[in-house]
Image (cartoon, rainbow, N blue to C red; front, side):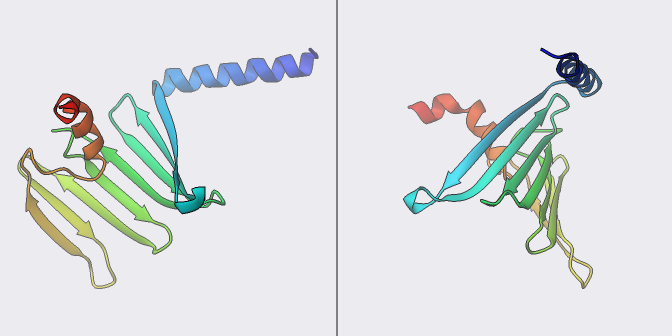
Length: 142
């Protein structure tokens, strides 16, 4: 192996180690949603950080970014805070959770709409369904 390739490999290894040390570990998962006839509907990339933050990016078949979500959870796993950006429609929705109340904000040209709803254990917000399902998997196996 040439010295240039060894240097590039070593530099790449050091860069990865520095990133892991600086940011902690990140788990990645990629999914492909297929429609009828096995055509790709969209591709989704999840990143799970040690901090509890969860980033999700949706891409079309040509790998153009369509939608992003940022989730984090301070309370129940089914009640994450959420910021969703739809790049096609150029819209954004945020959900902020407090102890017993969630506030959903949808900005608009008129200043935006705010919806408020009560949080109970039965309320599941977006990807909070994933955490709820994992925590209650035994119930679903019955």
